[in-house]
Length: 133
Image (cartoon, rainbow, N blue to C red):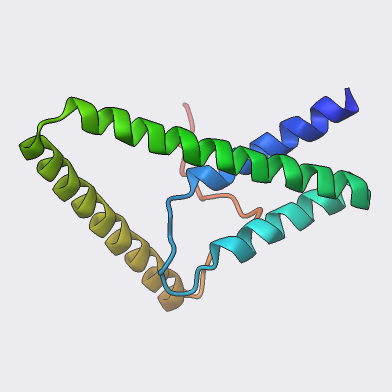
């Protein structure tokens, strides 16, 4: 049970990191440092021993390799279905998406710098709910 919990939390940690778009190259964001902080926080909250931490790091490394292989295979399969014109169009669409994401991230960062309200871990987004009458 304990091992299943640790593996489950490890997968959850990995999946939350995978949900974050690839931000390498953006100002002020160090993906590796962010992942390390998340891992350290989890290790502290669970009071993991050094052996458990190493086991989780090994599991995460194995998972990253497996995901990279799945992504490469998926890209290859998609490319095998598309003709050359479609491949060019897909590459252009991916470039556009990356550029839009970059602009979005920069606007978000600029807004946080202007207001001094960068979200911290644990902060919940503000949601305005109507009260029912």
